[in-house]
Length: 249
Image (cartoon, rainbow, N blue to C red):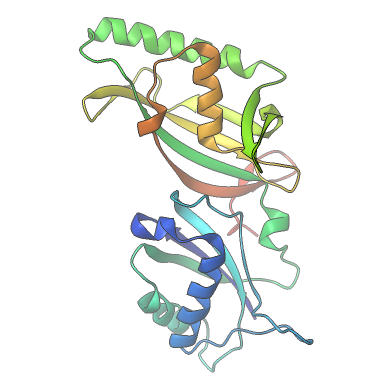
């Protein structure tokens, strides 16, 4: 029986590396007496697979993991889910579960979209409300113009080399959350962004890379060093381009 679980990864748990998450879940299943199915062959491994990895240090509000389990005699997974929840460390919260049909796609093959929320402080303070509102309006117009570009390059360091990568194909959208609304943050005025990116084997982009390129190209005074980003969800787009959660199968 294959189950799909949604979970949150936050606080100190956001610093757990992706490979360590598999071991964490294996131990939790073992302590909860829910038996995971192993592959056959010379080197058997547990049948557990996660969605797109989170960067170390980033929180995820709704992540997903698929696990093949052996039925343990309870009518459904409710009992096992309760036991598993009790075994999770601080920062890992199980949110929901479902039994998958045989036809269900694997998470990595299914997911193609990630959504992030980024909170970016400003560097300047003590401006009049009218002045700030005008700057926010101009920021929105600049964001719209910037996204109309066909190519947006960002430098990445790899093996001691600096490579210029076109990140535009991996940006689905960037919007300011609550247009014209400012947040007070540690003595500076800032703005929140919703960033939607492509997931897949062809490549990816991180939200801070997108905001870094935007601030660079537009000459903005946003404080990216104090910016915070979290992933609010991962999705797949149906034939009509509607965003669907992995629970919707």
